[in-house]
Image (cartoon, rainbow, N blue to C red; front, side):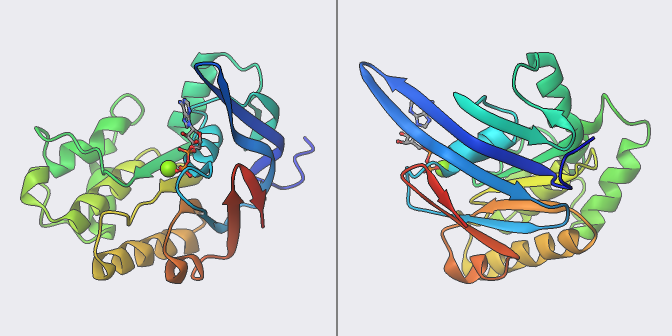
Length: 223
Ligand SMILES: Nc1ncnc2c1ncn2[C@@H]1O[C@H](COP(=O)(O)OP(=O)(O)O)[C@@H](O)[C@H]1O
Ligand SMILES: [Mg+2]
């Protein structure tokens, strides 16, 4: 299969939204190629199209036009069921707002996305919570944790199905600089073991720690 060795490959991808009679060009003929093992920072002002880009890479949304390939999957025209499968097996998501389920414990939150897939999901969840430094918090509820700890739970959860790509949309946006630094160190640690990461950030210090910075302005990408 000729995939040029890229894990993520986008060519001339545009995304339009309609708002009343207005058309919003959220992405304009964007090109992006990501090799396995890269750690990409996506930087741009509010409203520039960063989340739209992440949603397309994450198979949460389809482009209006252009070519998208994730691993060996050409996204165009794939039925919703297959997109869901790609999301579950290939991609992990981390968001600014954590999105933990408040009535489930730390361990249960991490296990949840793996329950349908893996026999030994609890073992893997405990292992991941160890890696993010939370092995003493397994039975806590999310509201008993600090923001930094909640985001570490979300990171462990995002990795439960062993994805090859981690998409993080402003993962440190709700954290102070100390906790933000910890989260990025954790990403670096997982990146060193082969995880490919695409991360939106507003923080220039954080962006410079990545292997590549992609700038986005009014839907246009430049490396
Ligand atoms: N579902 C949607 N419907 C209409 N407009 C949208 C939608 N999603 C995003 N947009 C618009 O597309 C542009 C890019 O948005 P977004 O990708 O969320 O930017 P960012 O994440 O960089 O802040 C903005 O003008 C936003 O208002
Ligand atoms: Mg956004």
